[in-house]
Amino acid sequence: MGNHTATPRKQPFESSLTEILSSFWDHNGRVMMTVHRGNWKQAPENSLAAIQYSIVAGADMIEIDVQQTSDGVLILMHDETVDRMTNGTGAIREMTFRQLRELRLRRYQGGANQPLTNYSIPTLEEILILTKNKVMINLDKCWDYREQVYEVLQRTGTVSQALFKSTASPEEVHAFLNNKLEQPLYMQILDDSNPEMVNEIDYICAMVHPQAFEICFEYEEYERISIEVLERIKQNGCRIWTNTMWDSICGGHSDIISRVDVSEGWGWHIERGVNMIQTDDPEGLYAYLNE
Image (cartoon, rainbow, N blue to C red; front, side, top):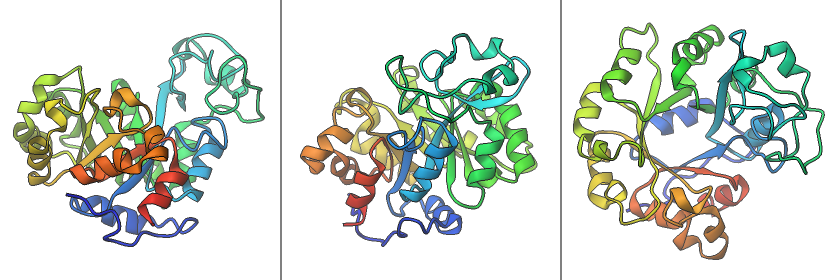
């Protein structure tokens, strides 16, 4: 079903948002690469440096995780606490931005054994300014404060390059997307939390008009990753996104197996019709998409 060499991609260091958005809006277009939490093998996850390294690696989109401080500042952190990634402890929602800014990020994906770096926790606004007119951004972990996130997107002029996502009902999503001055981009997640949605794709598309569906699956036998469901998604004019960071969300067709047998990794997804892949190995996936 897929041919990853059909359309030449841009070269690294030549990130063009115009080309990226043109590809994104072509639901039958080339396979696009999303870098998970930034290129964390080069700098701490969700840091400004990790985002910059992702751009250099040729990312089309960068997935970031957004949390909110006690004084309402939107910052980047995957966990609800700072324990894993910094030299501090505590819940982000109970800390002020000033307190968070004094902390230092740990290397890579953090943990007590990883050394501290000179990087601090960035704000969402800083990330959006860095990536403006360069690359798309995928907004994770922030559905509960989506209105506040949208305000920052508007303020920075980045609504058109930022992709919201959630497992929420079509009615809830519609309420958010409706009557916005500038229409946000949206991707519907299909996972174990909403198995009934696999039978509601046509309704979701009519109600919400998502640009893509993100599909998480532990086993490839799951209906949501079947050829029939993927075809229905594409017939509705949507892109198909899968994740290859670890086995349990991609039926074992992961970054790791891609290094051994790419036809069972990234190639498996592309052959099935997937045209957006989120990875922890941007250099490897970029090389594969351009071989």
